[in-house]
Length: 128
Figure 1 (tube, one colour):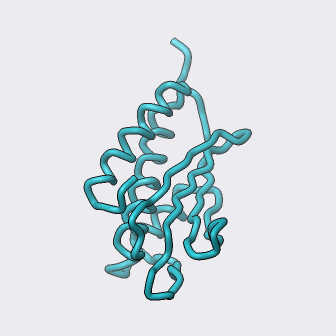
Figure 2 (spheres, rainbow, N blue to C red):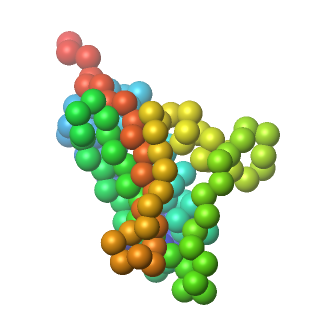
């Protein structure tokens, strides 16, 4: 998707649609939507990317979220700093850490960008 703020709501909408098709519980959908929003926004704001990728996959009892950026054309790699609820910046990553069973980053396949990932617990919607 284009690395613009206007792409963030579109990424959230796509994730909500896919998770509804999977039959995910509403709380799971809300948590995944929040994490996608935070990570996608960070890629838009803190890199020089023209495009940002967003992938989710169901792996066992977890949903894996991967947000891929293209890095910074000035040559500086994105830096992830642990968030704190008391800091003005970094609250989003604090939320990502609180909602996920694990998260981190790695270089993308090109070696220029970064993949930020998070694993969230998965639960299906209760049967009626």
